[in-house]
Image (cartoon, rainbow over all chains, first blue to last red; front, side, top):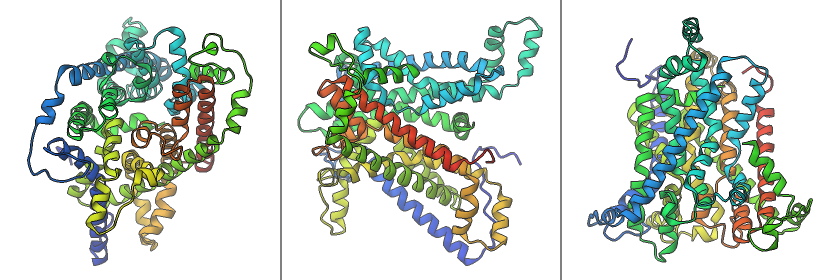
Length: 291
Length: 268
């Protein structure tokens, strides 16, 4: 029973092939498709407005197609610079987060200490903390330290906010690497750090990729943090510059807004597909949820 | 992460401001921010709106809809399964600000929703002005349901089929099975999920900010918006921090509530 695809075959619950069950299945299909249609409409607007010559807030199949909205927004100062800022912010914070998370998760995963449980509870609490609640004090902290409008500082702050979740996920991935391999390395004279680098990390590479992408996506989509902490337009990431599209130019250019939004969304959608298809969607979820 | 919390609590007892004398030399004012908060007529409204927003959009909307979709997904063919999950997850994967714009265009006065309603002969309202809370609640349900759906789908796959079969043989219908067998089996996942989505929803800022800016008036000003306005528009960091502390407390209350009611002992 080795199927080539990872798609789980759901066992039909005890089919007795009664007509009633067929009706129920049909009803389930219809209900789901209706829900799907409701969810689809706003998404469809985004796409249709971006290729419509006369876009508005209404969803309609455009009478004339155009790519000029894309051409209009694909200029260095409007799109490329913010996207580059986003990339720096997201990749930077993801790299920092992964390194720190590995170093933090290693002792939690490997040694039994009586501080483990309280530490993990604290991490879990940190995960849950609403980010908007700490933004006001963080802002005043940044003002005091004179780090306002500093891309590197914001990168580190984003890394710090995603750390709890990342440590939690990394620990769970690390738990699935058998200790016996490291013990063999220790017997051969490797230090703990060396064993971590040469044995554990290569084995949990998919897990690390999941954590990296997870942090990257979060940082990429984060609007609130850069909105508050970064002031000069030349440093703002795409999420904030999308907002300025909307707010500053009086009448909103819906076509360009939609086109820009789609360009901006593309990287995270691709990364999400990589995680869910390539590395295993439920696996990623497991790392996050399982206790 | 503990740092900002302590900092936040400390600052909330001072009169720190962004400009003026108090910016340079903030002084300790004790509970003044809190007493002021209690006398601010906007504050109870804001707390109430926050609770309404969390309960309606997360606890009821995302949670129940997510569970319903997950249950239904177990009964349909692969094509429907793929289509529906792709669409629902699509709304969730998009960056928050993009999702907020899509929702804004959907609920705007001459937006898609009114266009659809006009299609079936109903004269739609100006949703963002007349029913701002309804609009942001629906938008948040639209955006967030995917998470609950995925958690519940994973949880439902872990329910051993023998137990469901036993219930079928005992003559339990679909709904009865769901209420008496499946839901108790996935109680742990429900608690975790509720906690996560509650705290996420509590923190929602971008969606509401883009759609209504907390308005009209203060009729959709939830606590994050209020904290933002006090701290950055009126430049009173100390007062804004006091609101932030209240938010953290509300989150803590919800969390304790879930852990108590849904996890008696360690048997699940």
